[in-house]
Length: 297
Picture (tube, rainbow, N blue to C red):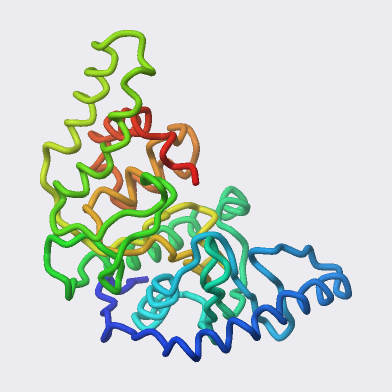
């Protein structure tokens, strides 16, 4: 079966007016309480970040959820990817780490990581080809913000748990992003026993930062728990809070940098395109060593 590698990005979605988002924020607070009752009644496990609701709905209200995630979901869904349909989203200015809540449809299926090894070879290949089609398609999307700008779908900052202070940008050039990623290393030099140890880490990072890369649209958190499968097909590609325009290596090196080579996910990511960026694996690890403490809140 052939899968389209040319899913088109439509006109950029626009955010709802603030007053509408505030209204739904109030409603979503009531739904949080209702979810506790519903889970108790139905026997489902309650989560205060991904809240189960009846009628096939889910309320996401977690750290770092932003309007940018909603817009990224809407863009991916319009392009034809299996993404939850956003019903309404609310704003919570009194909740600094969870400013936005999203009421969305629940997708069928199980996380890829929990079922992959129970699938037959044909099903595994189908899922690989479908994911390749989705990722290849969005890497072709043209940015309205310029070919070099690193930013979210809407041109704003990017939220990612693997960057200093969980947020970066927007940047007009890749060099600006590299400077930002390396900024915390200046506070870590005293951690190393000798200056050569510190300089060796910086030299390893330079393997990555000395190259120039295309800026492509990226999911931002390519993990097997963000892929749902049902009846041998991808039924969900979820968790778009980190989506945006990044250097082309980003999704793959993020997924591979600490992955054991004998785990099936490692080979899966290589086949998706990660093999082109294995040269940066050591540089990614060195960068993490220099800056990891800045990832905490």
